[in-house]
Length: 373
Image (spheres, rainbow, N blue to C red):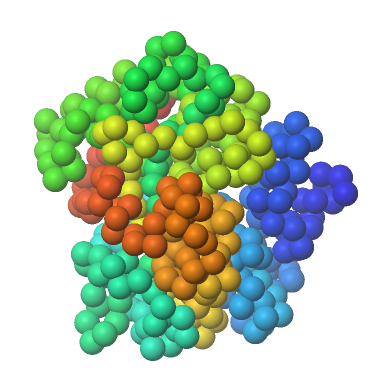
């Protein structure tokens, strides 16, 4: 099957994005982005639309949904949560979207989302309560705003054969002058700015102060000349690490897991200063045109089948406790996971939701820094 055939198969749901990426890596090819187009031409008008990050638009996460409806949902892809919220504020209506804990309170405040009734989800009894009880998630009367789905870390993935480690693993690795032009980073401030805060020693409890803002901005400007690529397309970072174009990059767990499965000698760092930790989940638009289907999307993503895939193939934690039963403690530890999410979340730095004004200021400043100002 050539690349065009594989791309067609991926868009039809016959080949996963992960399998497509692996085939490109094996062939020594690279792509800057492989977006999946919404399947509106193939799906019925009653199918719901799932607005999510790249990599979550794959058949493996929708086995129960496909079994019930005979098709996949429609997919729409965003590169960052601010981009997604801006688009929905502009009138883009979806059924289910996929924010993270940092964004969830501000999303709720927009009035664009309806609460979720857990009694409509068959997998809800197996969802870890520690992930449900996030600040601002209680919608009253037993309802919630966001159904937790995945959780994990942002850290440094580095080539153990190309990056000469001096001392302990540290965020300093992405500020190492020896590797100027061979370092990469996620492009969204929701990751990069907060990792810069860890590097700069800023306490997240005070991250909204002017002093902290200036300290982080200085660290990000110091790093800017060293970075070869900023991108939220994780495929780009993975392929650059696989080829040796990059020796280290800021990534999520999944990049290191994928590269190791392909035999690329990488390590997902445990920085001495701590990793960035997060929980992401699912929210329903207030005007969701396919509410029953929206609940089916969420239930599919919370299923054991989806959980096993997320843990094994992406190296992410999942909200369904039963999904972990397929893995022994050693395997989970090797993935940087545990059956106790609090153990992982408290081991790093858990993001603290900020005001819209702070988010706008942070994003504007970071965009200027990336542009060289």
